Length: 200
Image (cartoon, rainbow, N blue to C red; front, side):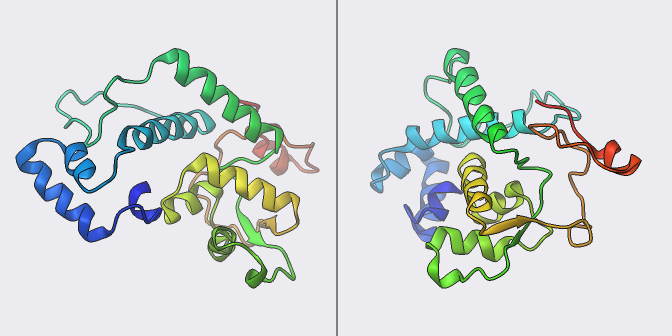
């Protein structure tokens, strides 16, 4: 997904690589043959983003499927905990300092924002900030890293380009109740108090 959304490979070439990998048993070799030599760098980026995504939310249940197919693009040497854990903690600290939950906080464009004056990346984010989408939802729609989109969204909030959606707008709450990365200020009602989340 990251390869396609970044434009690093065309959809037709991706499909051809998948077909070729059925015979060669190596999607990585098929991609390298098409000039995508940084496959393992991308695999590592996806693993780190997945760890951040899991740590930033909550795992309600899990199942071990011993019959699951191996990943199409495995990390050749794995990812050792000594690399994975500190990097995940660093990313959580960065996002927590900005008081933004990638799963809970829904976003809308701030009043008066002119998309024409934004970068292409920011225009896409603004276009998908419908009041029903979180940073996680926007990252998924755009096929981008959750961490990078969350950081960019927090910057845009700080610059007054985005705002938190009011409850009347963000009525569809598919992730309602997930923990925030930092506790909110005291709410003025029992309902608001029940929605405060503890710090990760």
